[in-house]
Image (tube, rainbow, N blue to C red; front, side, top):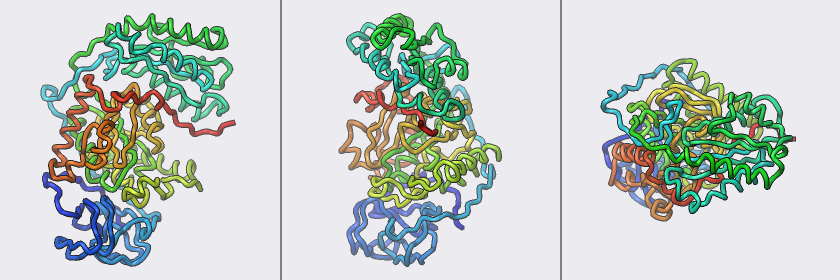
Length: 521
């Protein structure tokens, strides 16, 4: 069954006309704007038989029932009935079913051609004692369990902008609370995952210091967390147990005093010039539409390719949202071992984690994705995977594992954005790049988030939330390569301290959401 590798969608050619042809072998085209019934399309030789919303597919020739529907020359579904040229193609006449894919591990691997060190871009970052580089300078307060969530929030809330005004080099005091830590499995992957996530935040280069606060009787015992993750209290890491400290009020007071004592040293941090090789960008998409695979996602991929040549790292995640096109990544893997790691994660999702569940890896995408023109998960995955660019897949990580490889890597995670981004940040991402077609309102801490709009109408409605309008590619005012360069330059500016739109709006205080994979009891 057909399933060729995704082509590089970049082109110097500007997009014009009512429809967009993505590949010569495609049997569908995409409506660039809303297309009325009876619209002549001379370039294809037919007239539309349906009204077609912008971003949706139109049959470019007769597609027989059962025949693969090809977009970017990749199978994104099968015709549920005979479809005539000029007909709207969407979930009503598209069937989702499995098809064979050739993983061809590492067959198309090509190493990244790194730029000479003298030509690599730089940004202004915070160099930490272990050599890692931060893009922000926060103090973080982590809860081991939901029972200490109120305490960590109350401590953080005490440090208002007015009280922090005398510490201009500190970006803020932020609480990282969550809803688990007790009533869960005491051993095994669920607990290991939670502790791995917490430790990744406690050690994050965007934190100058951290407090970890537990209740005392929870399953995620503070002592167990510290031992598993080789964390040691003292210096810039302080710990409190509420049942030992004297309860809620006394723990809040003790936490406030501890942060006060840490602020002076945190304020001594100064930005300095560092190589772009220290940038580690988590790649996210949410509220996707039919233009995601045409504008913002491949443009972000172009930026990731640039970043890789400068020695930096891009982390693609959201395992359910590469399903169906994972073979386009395994073929670019650095080795068979790397490719098989990715396939093993896909199989775990399909054969163990989501069996019999009504989730998107089993076919259906969200109502917003449907309205935006995406018929099923195969089509969504086609666009989602493009965020990683066209370079080699250097490594595959489990959720929240420390990312050490350079270039394009993958981290296993759900498609739910806060959970996925939390894993990326725990792994070391010091910046998040988030594409959206419908208009996702996401932000994160301690890693700043930049948001990339797929189309101009949405960008104009939501300008306060969007950092870049990749819809200019559709409008014919920018090429893919130009947009990729703009995004890369935005990375450097935000990493150097420029505030993203989500930061200006104050987003990120409630987006720490560790992946809950185990049984609750």
